[in-house]
Image 1: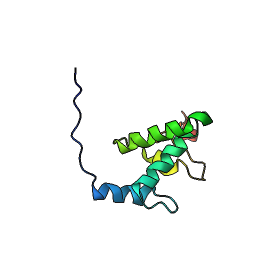
Image 2: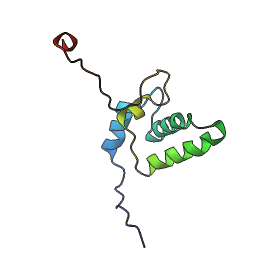
Image 3: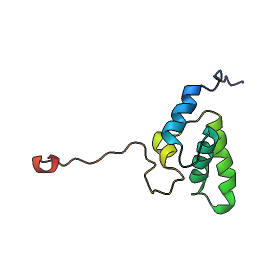
Length: 100
């Protein structure tokens, strides 16, 4: 049995420009630098002896077309401790005084 693969689209300038405008941090000037920061940060939760392996895997996934959610691209690997959860719910109370 063979597996069909999607036709790979060439990199688009607007995609690169948007990623860099929204998610590049500090001196990052390329898509590769953003992807490496994210991959390195995601690998930090792994045991030290496995981090390099997972950093390579996370980087390869991005190079193969995986696009992390915006919060992950924005906050992974930066000094500011921010959530990597892209969507979360703030509970709303069940009375007028809690809603207002």
